[in-house]
Amino acid sequence: MTDGGGEAVLYYRDGCHLCEELAAVLFRGWPEHAAAVQWRDVDSDPAWRETYGLRVPVLLIGERLVCEFRPDIRRLSECFGEPVNSL
Image (cartoon, rainbow, N blue to C red; front, side, top):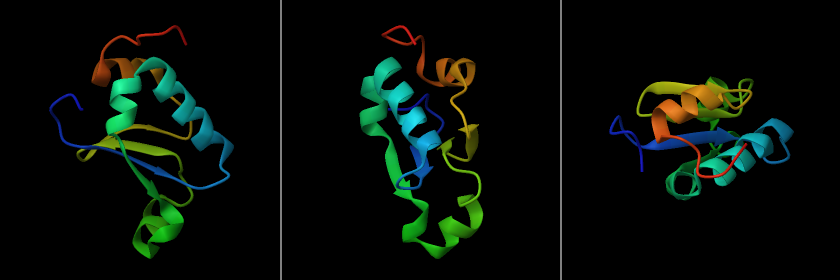
């Protein structure tokens, strides 16, 4: 599920505490959207690692940057609506 602007893709790295924080916020506030996100480990593809490796986590909807490094609740709400649980 997205806001109509394309697929939601989250670039992450295993063991990244910022990635875990964003995942927790997504699943708590927008569980139905979080379940539809395409999760891409930057270390599984050299092009992803080069592009996003120093910026993870990076959440895109289509080509639009939603947030990187830390969850941006305002931007997430603009894309997915109000969170279903308090954050």
